[in-house]
Length: 331
Image (tube, rainbow, N blue to C red):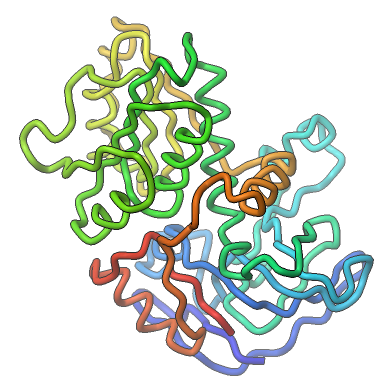
């Protein structure tokens, strides 16, 4: 089969790889669409020791099941493979399973390929008339939906009464803004340093879009809820400054693990900081429903390219040359 293989920092190669052979309980899926995630970019830059080269990356995928109870159906893939037996798995929080695996990390190759094998439990059927490129957005949108749910539980007021700031206009950040909008938030700001992505965010929803590098771009103490969809020291610093007393910072991004939080402010002003990691299967299925019902709008903030042009797509993303919040690769 053809696959896009990470071969070293800033290097991606489109080449032949063995077609996967499913083990017991697994099914092969023929990939129809797969998104490039920020974590794929992190690996591409050589910044993720969990993803050593050579490796097939990609975990945001939709395709056709070739066998099993979904045989012939279009499915989306939950890339988190959990043990199914621990307290977290049994309690519906498989995203916290200590023995979890994820496709695109050894020992599981990713979905930048014509085929992938995956446990049957990790597939969710989607309507045959759902655009595969939209279905492939299930994973990043589910991450945002889960984060908003975690933040909502931590807030002391309804979302409709909150001023919300989302830092980062990529797929997860923009999805978080769209989920907030669908749940009644009316004062939503989206901050991004890339002017192309700011333009995309402006067209995606009823948001105030700002450049965080400009003086006064983000109001200090101005937001009851701040969602950091980047997760770098600079953005944590910005989130700490922007959150209002008694507010909540929901931290999704995983750019780095260094510095940024104003612990003194969080303590003196009773700010709640919550980390949020991926999603549960309930979130995943709810996202499929939201996409199917058009709850999050037309999802017109994506760009589709052939899988064979994946190397150029990675390079364009690395240099900020695309306005799309998500590039979807089509095998």
